[in-house]
Image (tube, rainbow, N blue to C red; front, side):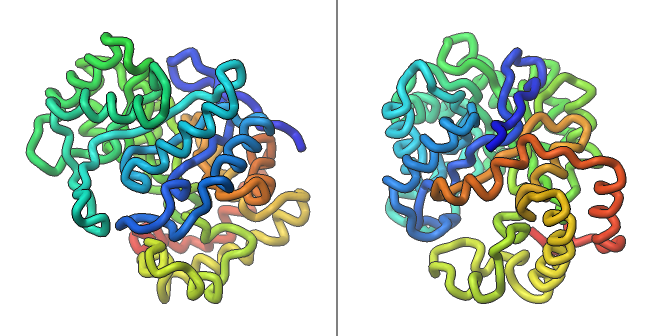
Length: 333
């Protein structure tokens, strides 16, 4: 197995592997956007295997499993040890109700709450400093982004986080934050069937030295070799994907048909369909790296090759041609 190549992460000075371990599913089930049941021992084994295979960063969030993902990541970090510890990226700004775990979280960037949320993440992760702390979503509770971003920058000054970033922000919000203090990174969704960020957000980041780590490069599993209508039907009832727009008719049929069209390309390259889908995101100018989820070492073997897979111009043209001009982005989410 060829280890993922290292890529420059914006202006942070960090060199990060082209693919990173995404710990959303590690949070397990029993909450509004869970991926169904997940064994913690398998999660730890997957993270240890990822690090042993050359992945040098893990991305998680407080909301994943309502704190549980960070706790499991913390357990893995303790087992990996300080000498080999990967960079740790996490997120804040989604506030949940402990009394109703299935209630969707509130997108709330309260300047008074942000330092407390950081302290909670530090405790769950068992680290002294978070390498990258990100706003998970734009605020919907009425707080001014200027005040929220100032609170985030205060965490850098306090030494609790090394770099401050955002997720799911548009250019307007990025331009509000940047004059107050550099936005180290943006985390947008990006896949072959959801290319919205290519038009505006990623070019803005490229021009401003802001690193970009994209999420859902496999479209939450749709662009993988083993996804099928039957597998979707077997998903746990508390797996958010089971009723998501991209996993229901008629969109799922179109996406899976496109996935099937990628199979000959993958076979010719000696790679998985998942690796081809991920590698495509890494060819977009301005993209630093891609976040990819894994529940077991076996799953990681299915996509880690994307970090060193090269797609030449004729192959890229062939992949883009398979979409046939069909725009699925509006229906995916």
